[in-house]
Length: 99
Image 1 (tube, rainbow, N blue to C red):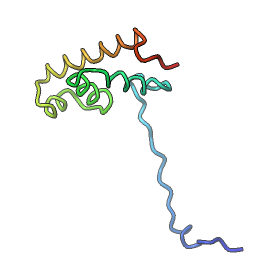
Image 2 (image 1 turned 135 degrees about the vertical axis):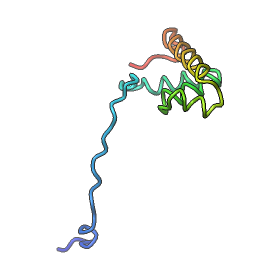
Image 3 (image 1 turned 120 degrees about the horizontal axis):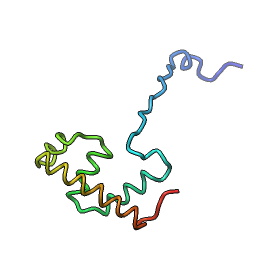
């Protein structure tokens, strides 16, 4: 019995396997990333924007400053405050912890 689409099989190519970058942010445990996003959504808008751009999307502080129209120092301070607030939320158990 012939395959249904023999010509299609001849032209199919296999994409190379995607290489996954090792995440250095500590989001490698199941649920940690989701809990971090939920905590970030509770932040004030100014801190949330900087946190998401830096720690989730991977932009540099220079890029964040240009995107938001703020100084690099302001971006750095907002990022520090956002990380501190997220850490305090985790310590207080405000949104539950990932197992």
